Image (cartoon, rainbow, N blue to C red; front, side, top):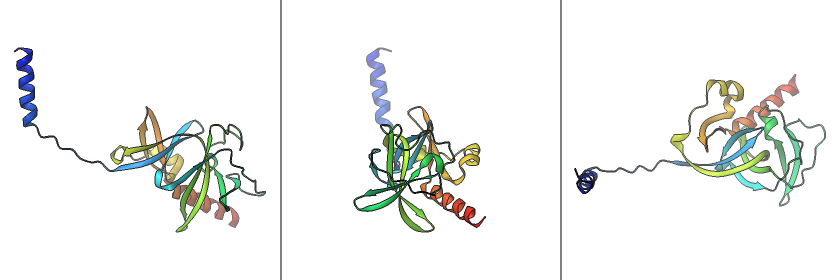
Length: 183
């Protein structure tokens, strides 16, 4: 067959083939680092990305997960060390490496109430739209480490990313805190 005949046969076959386009549901994710690992939160839970230079005021006697509070537009918000909430060792003190650190103003549900919280994370990598079918269940080893805090995993730019369940993360902290107070 000649190249022209090959092309004609290909075009004829292509005309007979129906292409069905299916719109996959998309999810927006905020991707960031913590302690050398890559994590994400659902975009709907992150209301705003704040400057890491934002002044945070320490609160004496607080749990190590609570860095302090910050004032934003006349409101006080608690600032949490995301690494500490996940049980990871905190890789830098508040204010260190601030050029890379980011503060995420989030909306979390704790005991069926919505609460605004600020999470200090490593570096903010990107905000992406991802097809929901790319989200996979977390492995049993990840579940044994993070429990219900790990909602899903996915691959992004050749790296494994853990999608965190912000509500489970905050609920776990509140339950640990309540257990420590009663002990």
